[in-house]
Amino acid sequence: MSHPRWALAGLVLVAASATSGASGCGEAPPAGPSAPVAQEEHLDDPVVPGVPAALAGGAPTSDAPEAAAPKPEPVPIAGTPYVRGRATVTVRAPLARVRDAILDVAHYSELVPHCKTSTVADTRASGSRDGYLEIEAPEGLLRMAVEVAKPVAAADGTESVQIRSYKGNVRTFELTWRLRKGNRGATQLSLEVFLDLGAAVPPEVLNQENLARALEGVVAVRDRVERRR
Image (cartoon, rainbow, N blue to C red; front, top):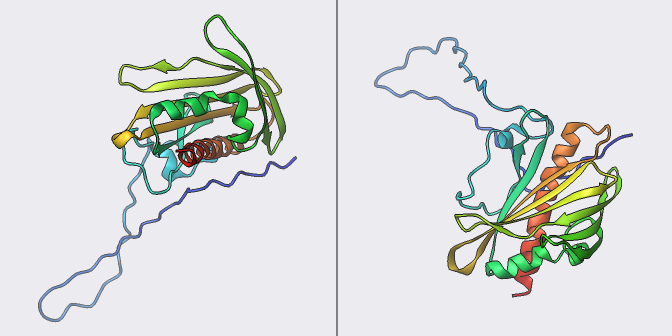
């Protein structure tokens, strides 16, 4: 069975070429044979299946300025060939409004790309909620029961919300949203995605899907919230 790859918006590989020149007084001597240029070795650069080297070389910190077009960042999972996909955007809306959108799991089918069905059932004693998602994937329709955790606030003011599968036809499906107040009433929103189908799917295919889903999800939430301002 072939596994079509997801197109990744905003992934641009930049190849830089170096030019050399010389200037001096008088007539220049004839040019001799050019010496080979030594290539710098990067022995510690990670090699991650399905992730371009320009991305796998390291993700920017959350304090880095956002580019005009957001790009997904690979987050390597130690000891495995897999990565979590992460993407970050600035939402021109207060944090509380962004939080309401990501906690509204019952309407993910109207919000998150490729989500066909979304419901929320019981609330647990811990404050987390049980839900059900159906998500389209190249490998077929993914059906899963999920736990939607309560928001957790860190010391630096960042809030996180995790949604994790615990039953279904996938081994692991995790969404981790992170929110932090930005400048001028805006919110910095980040999404990490990890999908493990538990089937014979090459790591490079799953890695590309994780990167694509992170970018699509965070951009969809940003666009929806900003339209409702």
